[in-house]
Length: 312
Image (cartoon, rainbow, N blue to C red; front, side, top):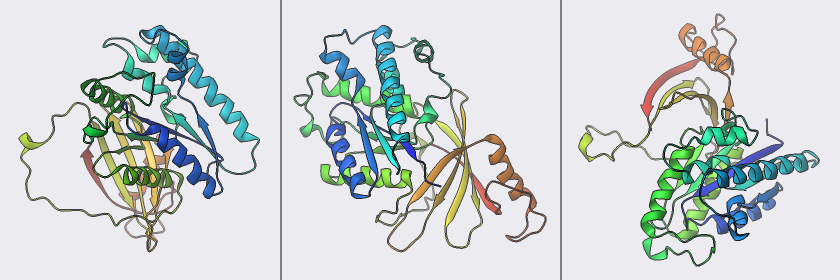
């Protein structure tokens, strides 16, 4: 079932292409007959107004303004007959990337009148546009944003902290600089289409079986999410349920449906309760065939075929 109002975060390090991407996303949504509401970046408004950008007081002001923007967008969307997508130029958790080590960002959210345990799940998805300072250095500039003055090294550090601020989100998509900028924007649109469940032509997924891996050659782990994933029986499409446990102990359960129509590969994902997730797990343990009469009621009413555990 399509959500009437969906909130999507566009985020990333400095000079990642957010401004251009926001305009492109809004145009594309309108072409799909979906209403788009584009929220401004609260921090930029305050900085350009002359506010001091440092300290937790500033982040408290940003959180309050961001929450007010989102609430107004939600009320506006509820009076619209069709589907509405609210594009947030950064979201509430971006503030964590701009606080000093040891400062309590959840407390900032609480002081802003928000529940720190629920602010993450208000967003359907997060699209992180990697800073040009990482992989496209010759295009890095702050000239198009008066509120930015970071060096390339500072931009890379901020980009990493921003990823860390959002890594617990169950639908975080990072769009890197492995292609030209136009292709980067197209990949961002593909990520958005997947989040909204809109079929979008895309390249076939390719996978390789690796015989062995030298652990020393892998990037050093800075943060991680442990994932247990169960695949559910279906004749034509792919469905799965996932349990994600972040290093701070936060647990998120999700259900995803991925179509396999010719020329398209779209994925729809939603957060589910622990009870719904465990119902699917029970179905996997007790059902021996897809039409087994002894299968317990579950989220999808289908047999889970298998599970795998991995870390991202």
